[in-house]
Length: 259
Image 1 (cartoon, helix red, strand yellow):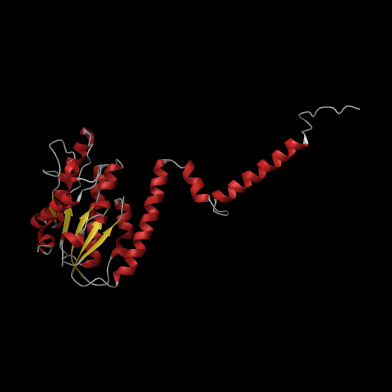
Image 2 (cartoon, one colour):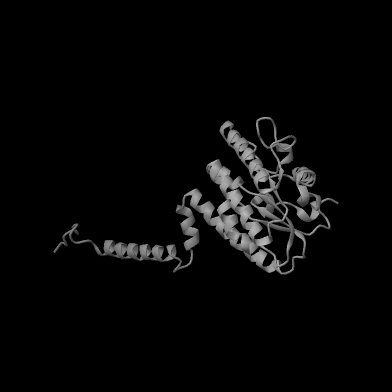
């Protein structure tokens, strides 16, 4: 007798097998997503928004940097100059730029002020510092945080640093630099941030190195392509200019870096 075709209420054996396979596949995906099976991190990155992926990468890089800080903190000599900040500090060729001067690079790529505040204690060496140089607020500005919020974070970072190292610690702020493609709106916020940082230096007795000037920056507040490695970061020639400005305008911290 001829067999009746399968109905929706009675799925065929092949469909049953596919359904079981689908459930098993979904279970495997769920386990991997929560790192109970291999491949979860790679899978999550395929679905995460760019902002979430960028934050995850920043946090992972910060962990690697903190491990490096921990390994080197005990060997830092006394009276060194501490450099704290985002990628502009991490990429700063301190040994080549200030030969013979003990400098500590505690830059963390893409670090905003919240991350810098949270990692400041782990960045401190065991020995007392001679001075500190800060480049902060750039990541916050590019994330479109309000200028007033950025300036509050800068004050908090300086104050916490001095709580750890003493109120007489010479501190120099480096002004936030623009990108190559700075918009008119971003340029206005940069000017406001620059004015606010100069006010902080007066209030807290810091030194300030302004960066919104030639040759690093043009009249429209765009980073000079011939002195930058990419949209936001300086080339070796750009760092040479920044280092000269730091020595000339960086107060006690800058004078200690002079050859």
